[in-house]
Length: 338
Image (tube, rainbow, N blue to C red; front, top):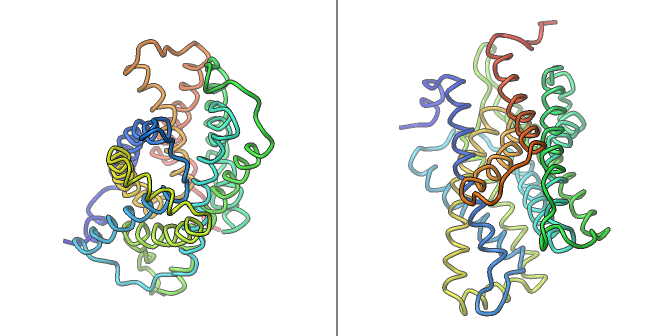
């Protein structure tokens, strides 16, 4: 059993459905677990060691990827380790900065800022990977409408005591801006990884472009993120703090483990998506998932009803996604050969 054969047998449309369904299911559950990890009190303490969490999460992600490689096999390609290492580091820092920002800004501000990540992904894809000509007019319109929809949705959300209260600090806003920039840089670097892979593994005319398996991408990216996180974890003293809390609270240890495993399942679909498609599609799906998770919370807790403005935002986002998919399925947006 080898992933290359699976890639040839599965139609592109089915691959996209697998990617979207997997990301939505995994990270919707991940979002529920994340609240327990960061909001609950364990043995009188709240978890604050961001880099310790990143070591656990990235490390388990890498371990899961390694298991899948052992089961399904690798691509046999030469892997651009340096480029993947940088990409993994920027991805880890983006997530760390996003979580750290919640200590300094309101929850709505953090979500609103992160909702616009498709913009820097496209921008850095153009600046770093030279993909300006790869994006069609439909891609630009989709990014604009999806981002607008998420902005409308978040502005329509009523501010709640506790989460939306208090002034946002300049430092917290800087963390969000830094996280967005790192998201965009990661997307561009992932495009560069693909190009470097082609250079390291030349093929004859007419042959398919070489691709590492999704789990190879997942392994090397997460392993590099875990290594960098571990360095910062030790340097900041968070390793001792995290280990001490694990020893004091079995409940916290269990929560961190389940959180990391849930993330690993989601990461399987994340790297499947970025390997088979593009970082822009990945950002579109993950941004839309944020709205899906919020809608899901309405069904879990009927008191969390949505107003008309929020439903309007949902319509813009899902309308743009479905419209773009239909447009390309019908053959629109294809580039002419020059």
